[in-house]
Amino acid sequence: MMGHRFLGMGIRCRPSAAGWLQFPGWLALFVAVLPVSAQEKPIAFIGANILPIRGEAISNGVLIIQQGKIAVVGPANTAIPEQATRRDVAGKIIMPGLIDTHSHIGSPAGGDQSAPIQPETRVLDAINVRDASLQKAQAGGITVVNIMPGSGHLISGQTLYLKLRDGEIIDDLLITNKAGRVAGGLKMANGTNSRRDPPFPGTRAKSAALVREKLIAAQEYRQKISRAKDDADKMPPRDLLLEALAEALNGERVVHHHTHRHDDIMTVLRLQKEFGFRVVLHHVSDGWKVADEIAAAKVPCSVIMVDSPGGKLEARDLDWKTGAALEKAGVLTGFHTDDSVTDSRLFLRSAALAVRAGMSRQAALEALTIAGARMLDLEDRIGTLEAGKEADFIILSGDPLSVYTKVLETWVDGSRVFDRSDPKDHLWATGGLGAGEPRRSPLCCFEDRVNEN
Image 1 (cartoon, helix red, strand yellow):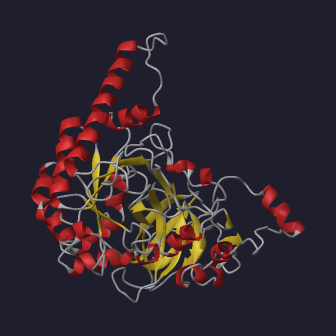
Image 2: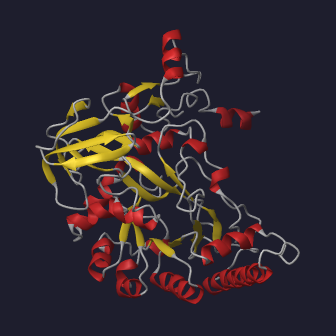
Image 3: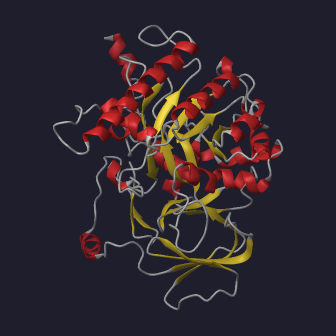
């Protein structure tokens, strides 16, 4: 279960194993009179080496946050308000919170087996925000995620962009976009994942044909709405499937497209050119083979860095050098975990592996932060440490690309959501399968007992 923390003060109450919060009377009164707005009193972090991502690193820097926003980022002689709480973080590293552009934390589920194209389904309706995977992501320094349905469909549903605040229901974590709507994209896929028995396609060509057919239908649906000119009598019946696709065609919803092989990548680029939707290519195992073509299409890539062989045959040519090849070609490049393919707690390692294979340090750090923010249309709010941006940042024990570095604290909107020095949070950072799930032990053999009966 997600814990409760108050107003960026680093104070928290965790639920007991039974799941109930028990406040002493005085604390309940204290909570009742607290102001609703976050963190009224400024907090100044002093002495850290700050990696703002945009701009030069600041040795012995100062970061001041207030009311959930970054107030000041500057050198050691930066003026600090008298009323500010001072935190000495000398010798530590502060950088923006990490942005995971492709994750499956919270056990999301999109389309079922009834059809290969189901854009009307929403992971908003299928995420457990009290799942331990969310707090493990916090322990990895991740502050924003794009939670995706699976890739077993050509279109498996609508994705959801979440802030990893502490919350009890999904509404507590939602991000609102510039249009005032819940922020999210659309998940699509090609390759072997969606090739199955009917009604799913059996070939790559049929896969593309089915997608093209539905996109044409969405174009026609959009035209009917336009011709109706807000006349209710002339409007077509509402169609949730075509409505979601029309949002993608209008650029209101970014298509996040699972694709591995170079020929599958080129198929996505053809469809994008034909229909004009905005797209981010995900995984791109063969991206290094067609980096110039991706660059010419001006399409971003979210890369997964897998550090061991295996997996699906179409990913057999996956190579750590993909990040470097895309950087050289001028492609906006980010990283993702595809959690649980890569554990969210190990996300920093993606950048380290890419640098080892030739990507520049700066581009790798951007791929963890501002590049992902741009892919999610959130670059004006998160992804760098700049005055006015939301106070999402992490405190590290050392260099972000070192295998020895630990995430010490994670802050979201000016509130601390992970503190490695707290024994409860330490469990999220170091525990294995089932860590932090209070019912794990009693339920470990439930399935076996059912089968025996």
